[in-house]
Length: 207
View (cartoon, rainbow, N blue to C red):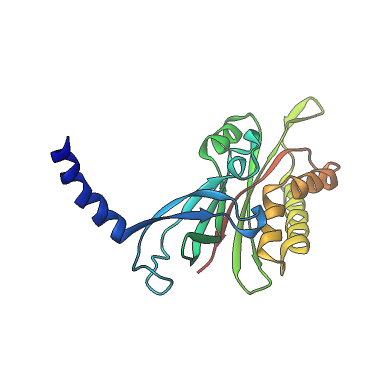
């Protein structure tokens, strides 16, 4: 036993002298919640920190509501502190199983891309999908005329631009993962075409 201890101690001491576990904290929107750990070298600092690293975390882990597991945030390291790493938003997406479940349903699927700018001049691309249910007109099944769908896309663009363009990044992400925008668009467009589901599926930061 003493021989084994003597062999293990140098490795442990060498590891402890070079490496350190640091906490990964969520953005301010979620109260700097602990979301994981990062193994850093003791010589690493903000100047040589590997900023290409990305972390993914679901909304359910941040809010403790399991039904939000399909909403996923992509975070990037912001600052490396002595014992922790702060993060900023770098993107958002719906889980693949959620998207597949939407696509498989017997509805018409409409896609849309809207570009907005944050208050600090960052450009974000917002990807949207919404589904249209069947209507019975004169005994025929229809998913809505192209002209009406075009009007809905214009309504969607106008609402998103008014609500998000030029706003703070935290507010933009909060609005996008909630159902506020989708519910408003469904309410306004119900006289044109009946929208069954409306989702912001992805947010991408343009370089």
